Image (tube, rainbow, N blue to C red; front, side):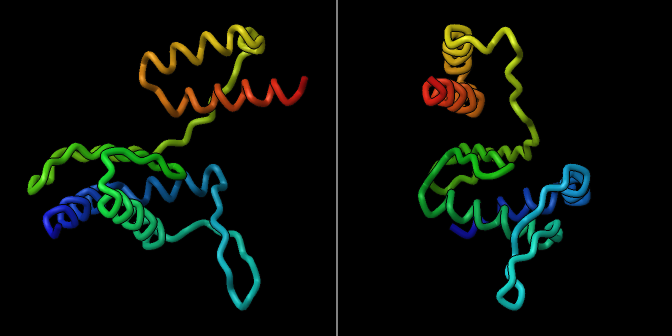
Length: 138
């Protein structure tokens, strides 16, 4: 288990945290904290960002997951017992925008099928939510 923790600590050391924090600043991605029983929203520190990623890695290990998508993080970890394997960490900041021609239910369903075929499950979830929203609007 220690070699797994060592592996993800190497990943954490190699991430450009100033760049991650700059995305938070540029896009005004705020976290909510409690100070003196009062909720405060602010940009997280680099240490807080690292701790957040560490907690995601801990969850991946405790649940024996090979993939997780949480917040702005996507982690793929291809490992075998005793071998650290390959770790891919993605910090994503993407909004999926549905163009006008995708507004119809049929085009959304076709886009959903294509996303599933490509195994782009994040995009498929966005499309599924749009389809569900259309059902609620009826």
